[in-house]
Image 1 (cartoon, rainbow, N blue to C red):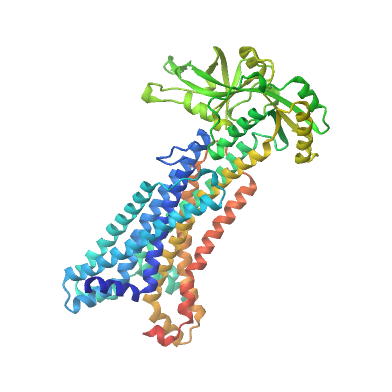
Image 2: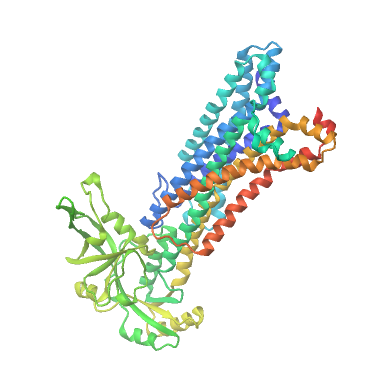
Length: 626
């Protein structure tokens, strides 16, 4: 009992240091776990089966989340290493005292390994519980009610085990090293504070006392200084990627989804078709499934010319866009390409098949903007634009099936034995991107359907959407009681809000890692203060002011922070360019927003680390001497 009671008592005696270690480890675990659980919730996890977002957006989220996850785990690993280093640096003198009192090496190592086990177990447990609570809060408080599911407990166990093992591995090594030290060496300040001899630095000979003392202290603690700069560099790489890459990716992907529908657009369709189309658009943010046996070709779904003329006569209506929607089994149309150097012919694609939503549109009125290629040309009868999910499923290389080359923009798609040449790829929330746009007249010809089954109505910007939608609903239900009006802007706004919330959450989760790095920096400053407190007390005893102490520690802190900041920003910008999609949306406002957030992060961390400096500056000279 005493072997367990002593380490526990020792940890409670060092409340500040113990809480620092536990909190830092818990934040690293919570940050990693909450990111993995959130990605699994929205459909981009390893084990997920959710049908949310389009394949193109899932690919972007996956690439970004994977890169951020690797950086978070790397920061967690470095934090675990550094926090174990700090803990053992502060305990080296205790090793010497215990060994000088006659304790054998095995007993000394056993005490501190027990202490390490307690700290690691508490930190990992709190971090795991915090990660689950953060995931629960995000899913219930930030607008993700549509994707409720239980946490993936395999991920919980994986993260807990990974950080538990890391903390033990990196914590046990310094314990064993300290256990082998002689009592005299362990009691020496050189071992206690990790100091090393310094050479004269002549370029600083003309500088003031503040800069000389601060610089000497940084150089004497070379090992700790190097470790904290590496840690801060990785943290600021992560911060730059998350803020810069996340903000730019969010603005770019949201612009794709926003441009799918005009804000002042409503749709008119049969009540059954209206309900089905609402489900098709809502799948993007909720994973809602459309009716399996829904018949898009049922004659009762047709919107007659009389209804179209009636709506056209309503004041405030600026444009009518008739569409024919159906679900068909489509097949890939391959092609060939020629290698200009070898003059060899290579096949493109294969004969893959899939079920897809087909939307017949008037080419000149299509409002979906492609991310690759172009829209359907006005007057064309054989061009098609496909969603990114269809492009991923049917027109991407698949070496496992012998499909080495594939490019949708030089291939085609066959619908009811009619071939269409693909001219563009778009991100479309309708049916989660499993959609193909073709000219409506050609679709009518091959299906022998004379009337559209949904009509989009664009209203003038000057009219009130809700009032005009109610007026049109009254007119169309009067002409045909089975018709209904859909306010597309409401569904579209939900999709945009979901997408923005998803990006904001992924960008917010690494905040835990930033806090853990700040706590590590506070631990570093605490070692600096312990090593220099008698020196500070002497300065104040001979007339030095508390501001001198604060100035010395502020210089040390700012040197370390800005060294890590400079290295992290430089490498972070390069990493951001790697994870960004092609043709990102970057405005002057976006650059200003990124700059403000990055400067806020570095200044916040700098101010937080000055708290120990103010504390030692306010303490009495006598207390600092002891």
